[in-house]
Image (cartoon, rainbow, N blue to C red; front, side, top):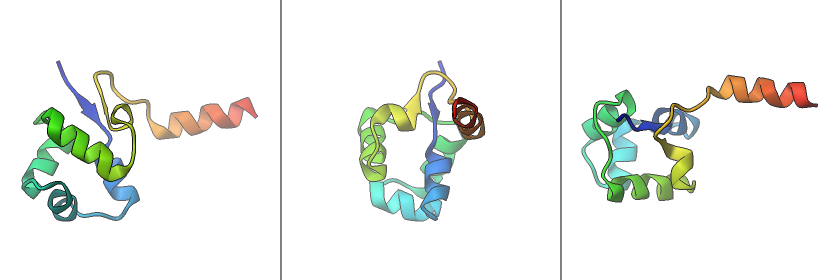
Length: 81
């Protein structure tokens, strides 16, 4: 089963490099790349560290289902108004 994440989007929003994020959560910068590409699933400890770092609930960073594209979410909100 694949675990999906928004790490790349969250990192880009904050202007962080993989190395900066890796230092903040105490992992190798390559681990961040593996996570972003879906080549590696984070341990529970790492997942919690990442969610805490981004100040988001865990389910906003990780999911068992693919995340809806942000552009689709924005389009739905504009149609509702």
